Image (cartoon, rainbow, N blue to C red; front, side, top):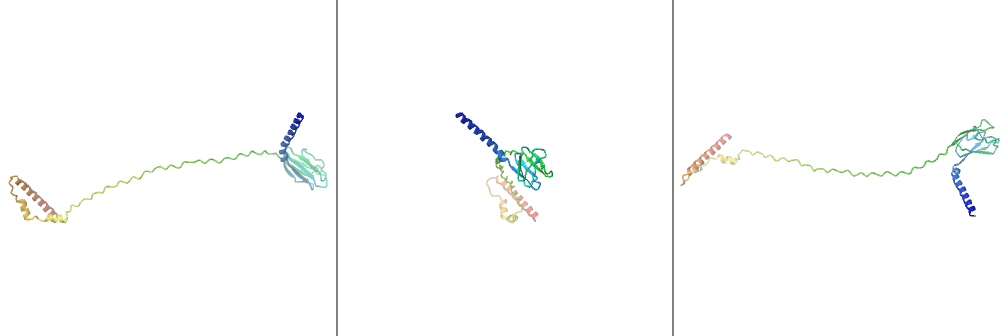
Length: 216
């Protein structure tokens, strides 16, 4: 009993696996219809994929056929209201005709089944590069311009009116006499000093007189 049960379970697993493998083929396979009407194939060109089936249905009141030009298929006689189906296993362009009416032609274009390309995972946005703030170089304080020392203004040699009046005034006779008259001194060395003072007074008075003469 245990062996039989194991065999049954194994067989069921195989059937289920085959069914799962066949599901994509069943889901992808499709059936396209071609009507035989008015002594023509409608539509005249049918596009299918590998694994798809084309079904021809006779809508006329008389018989027709669907016969491949290369002998890939032949429906024999399709009576009024009857149908014929054929599954295409290879890609290509297949021309066909009606063996009863030679002027009737059609084409089946079979495209290969393309495997969908895997979608690339979304790329992460680039990480922004943080740039350091620009370093501001310290600016040296402005050097003060050297200031020129004020140039001393030359003093005018012009004597003031008060000095002129004092210089031009002639000494009084009493002052001159007082300077020329030696004071009585008991010492005998005072006489040379008085003579030198008198000579200096004469020179000063002469210089003042010469200055006044040039000025006038």
